[in-house]
Image 1 (tube, helix red, strand yellow):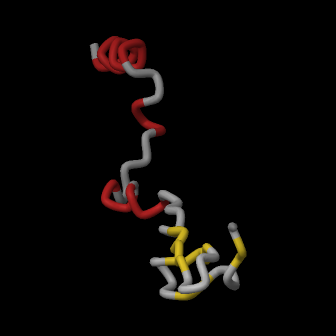
Image 2: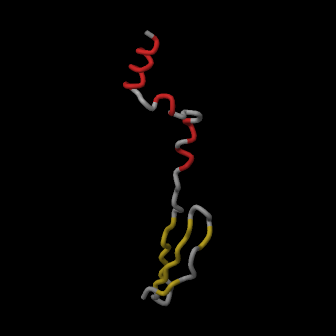
Image 3: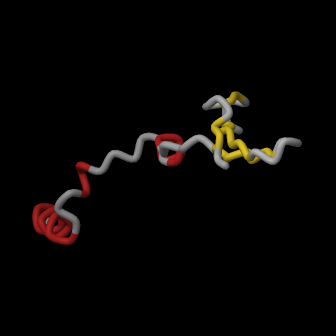
Length: 69
């Protein structure tokens, strides 16, 4: 009787013994996240426009000022 019950359970979920649910709370901690970056545009008094890339995640500039027009 016990053997038939075990066989029936294996047919329903053949991988039931192989499931590893040791720590389900770490699922979200393995997601890679990209830095948040923004182009800062500046129009100078001489009429020229420059841009510079700022990384909000690190709090640092990514580029020097680049002439646009």
